[in-house]
Length: 473
View (cartoon, one colour):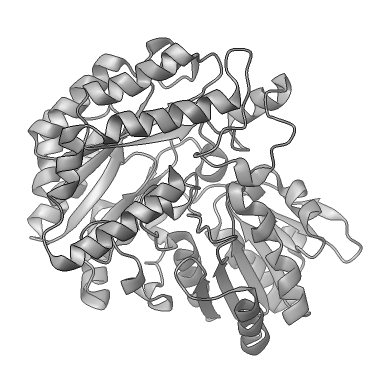
């Protein structure tokens, strides 16, 4: 049985990252992320002796016509479509393309949006056959096995599906994978790993998943519907095995640690870093973290193990706003976490969000000023987005705060579609634009970027980065 895994091509020239809660255009980081969810699911199906293919429209030069040709010529029995909220309309529309090119084939959508609003996805395209609710790998496996063996789809936990009469069925919920070490290494041989390169250096990099689930209660995050609230971890040995394997098989030594927060369990993060150090592994990597789950000792340990940048969820420069979104952190913790990381020799990226319910022009400016005060190396300023699956989405729908003219393509963090009694969406957009101007015109930020240009080839790469980043700002 043949199964095609698909990251859909760009829509109107916009590439979208589709990995769990990370749903933004590639210009946000001026880098395309390798599709770790698709590659891992493909590896799972290989263990069932299925033939798999992965098409990544984010990096491959393929359009709708080219995709139709691939489906027609390769003749898959199942096409797995990766989705994200801002691209959901065009992503789901691939189902009709599948039906045109290969009428016998079935289509299946994965991602946070189908997990939160499966019926809505079926309504978007009459040819969509199935959708996974939640963690995708084993549900995809069981759906593929059912199709191969001619058994009932109704027995596949975590699956929503449309029968021959057009009736939508929602099967029982699937339990989250208890032991993540059961998952095979991603099938990176299905993509050209050279096409995924870091900003500035241009070195190829891959994502390495370390853990899933997050116990914290941030109202703006939709990831619990995908990976749950309980922290589940891969063993440090398995993680470092994968890094070594990626180095030997594909020549990769740069990695993005993929988890909700690498440091949610500090002892675990220390053990993982120690495993890298003990093996003498020559790797460079970056990770993300909450500001209340780090220590000076931990930051020094991960620096020694090859980590060169850490990203913190700062979110806001106003304590009342942090409390209102149930972040569970303080401004003082942000100051301390950034200081400790800098003292450990790490570069620091901050993640800030503007336009939460209850915010004002003053609180948004406080966030901008706080980001400048912290002397961060880089900052991402996002508009608050009510992603389906989050408590923020439920609140905005109930309160009528989402603008009537908004469609899913504007549910992206460089747009605002939330208008509250305190703030209009246009004010949030203006504040975000102001934030980027005020932060990135600081001399130390400009100098930090210029210092990274060391070779003639870096000039062209930097020019590309600026062009991509402007599509985000």
